[in-house]
Image 1 (cartoon, rainbow, N blue to C red):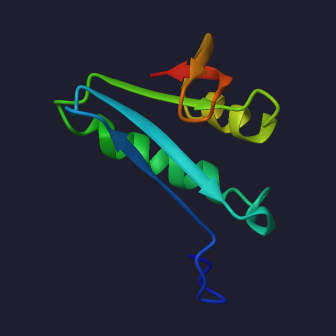
Image 2 (image 1 turned 90 degrees about the horizontal axis):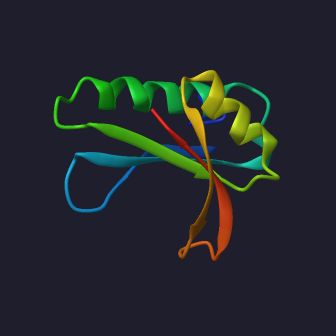
Length: 99
């Protein structure tokens, strides 16, 4: 939430399929919030939170390879690029990262 205007500008959190062993980091922000560090800050806070849970063994994330902003965020907060991977939900191949 952007405090000055009191409006929601994005979201960050996790998709959990069946167990906490593997969780998917997700973040989405409005275009007018890009470049201000909000996504990096929110994503880093989520990763920190997940690392505090002993059940979480792997955190993964993906992004459209053309979305260089998201790819840079993932790398800045410690994710390692593992290659391209097909995702049914987006119906495309995406850059895949893990911590």
